[in-house]
Image (cartoon, rainbow, N blue to C red; front, side, top):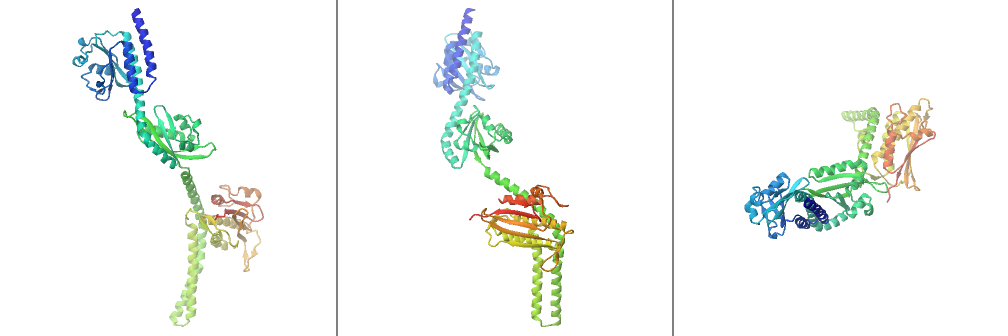
Length: 558
């Protein structure tokens, strides 16, 4: 009894010492040698060996007090039947007397003069990676329960230590193979302003190059390198999606791509794109994932800006179509006059030709009148088509006065039908300005249309005034331009003779859906404000007698 207690105490002490020594290194060969020598010293066996197992065969990995020439030798299942039994049962197999035990290949063990043997399966991550042999040569050996328990604990510790060492060595081999190319890669990434990341799946830590910190707005001194903190640095609204994408890429052995936002210390938001690829060891277990990051903020902003422009253009187009309803009826009236004149002129010319008159000059003048009236009709159609057409979104440097004349000329069709007089007061020699001409014309048309509606609404109770031709008019609209050198901007004013706006209405006139029209949709001034602000300008209404709207455009720098 005392002997058993003493043996148990001695083996427990030995196991503790072995544990300390095994966990002091991650070198696979050193772990194996310490395991065999320290275990043999505690158990009392003369020799020992470790055989590793792949899917179909055994291979001698390490030996203790046996010929080193055996290392690397392939061994069949028939030769080590007792090892096969150990891995199948996942239990210690103790052979007290080789000569009298049917569980061994006697011929194979006789080559090494083995009289007793203990086989311990090495199980790591619920997978058998090999076995450990403890051999007795001088005589048979009766293994006690204490020795079997010790061997079982030793095998468990050994399997974990060996598997960790194996994974670490694979990691080192991969790193060694990549190190030379990584140096060249770092230079290329820095030149391209890209960050590189290396996610160690064993330790769950992430390493970054210097560029990567600047992309995330972080500094190396305060970064923990934990994978959890990397994901925490991603915008909260994008974090779960990026994490799910990375997990899916690892699970499905696919490359990883994601776009997400990060917030820098100055509260600015940056868009980052990342591409990753997992790296696996010889056992197909993924050891790490490596990848690159690059800033796509400008691209994202351009996409968002273009989407906003397209949305604005769609709304503006709807508004143009709404206005076109009024033009449709007026266009028929507008075309009727030149077409009637053309017919009359043509009939007169044909009559002269039928009678054989020689009034060549009168005939030439008649044909000239036909051409002029045809051009007048064609210009009316061109004006309407240009108004309804979608224009390119690109900025062009243009003459503002030319586009004020174009928009005013088109609106004159409506103005004349309602006895409203449109006048222009355009400053001479205005500086050129960067604009989207169709959009600026849209702003002018919106403002002039609002002015006409205001005049028409009050025309019944207003006193009509005489125009320069002596006829009665319902009201006036004046469009003026001027250059303000102190602010380096052009200012456009649309002033009408309508009732005007009070101070409170002037403040809310540009709010979405606000309208004073019976059939209005409340978007004209909202669209106008968006267009002007996209051009870098300002737009506002002034409270005064008569409607007064102004907007500015910054002058193009030379």
